[in-house]
Length: 277
Picture 1 (tube, rainbow, N blue to C red):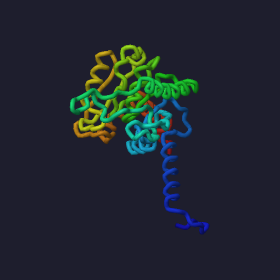
Picture 2 (picture 1 turned 60 degrees about the vertical axis):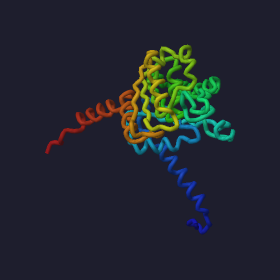
Picture 3 (picture 1 turned 180 degrees about the horizontal axis):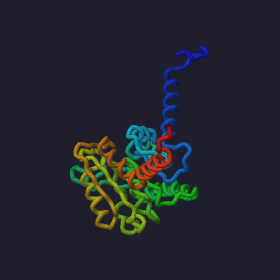
Picture 4 (picture 1 turned 90 degrees about the vertical axis):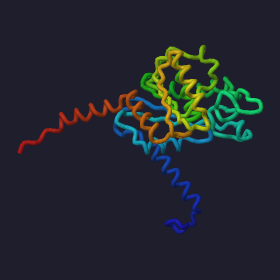
C-alpha cells in the first residue's frame, strides 16, 4: 500500500498504526476534560492479555464518566509461565495449572497445585504501589476502587482483603482467591469493611464455579462484605449481563450517577429559565 508521499507502507504497519491509535483513544476515553478528578478505578487484566481488551470492553459498556473518574490500567510484567513451557507471558503471578479448582480429576484424584504465596504477595505489592501513588496525589483510599478479570480479578480480591484501610470497593470478574490458606492472618479490618462484588459464569471452564461459590461463602463467613452473583449462561467472560451489574456497582460505590444528577439539576436551576421576550 502506498502512502500520500508515494512511499510503500506494509499492510501490517498500517494495521499496527491503527491499533495504536485505537489504544490511545481508548486510554483517553475516561478522562473528563476540564473537570477535577474525584475518584479512581484500578482495573487489572487477565494472564496472557494486556489492558487493551479490557479497555475496549468497558468502552462498549458506556460506563458513566460524569463522576470525574480517573482510570488506571496497569500492565502485568513479563514473567515465565509454568503452563506455557516457561515462555515469557504478561502475568501478575505464576499459575501452576488450570483449571482453577479444588480437586484435579485424575487417576487418582489429587489437590490442584496452588500459587506461590510470595509470588502473589509481590503482585499485591505492585497494586498497592499504584494505590499509594494515587494517595500521594491527594486521592483518599476510600475513593479508589480496584477490580479485574480472571487473574486480574484474583489479584484485585487479594489486594482488597489485605488493604490497610477500606477502599471504595472491589470487583472480581471470573476470578478466585489465591492462597486461601493465609486468609486468617492476611485479612484486615480495611478488607472486611470494603464492599466487594464477585460475578462468575456457571459455565466457566477456567475457574471452577463451585470453587468460586465456596470461596465467596468462606469470605462472607469471615465477615467480608461480599456479594456473589452466578450467571447461568456465562462462561469465562465478562458478558453483557454481568457487565450491567458491574457498571451499577461501580456507579454506586463511586457515586458518579448521583453527582451527575446533582450537576444536571444545578444547571437546570441556573440556566433553565426562559429569557423574557
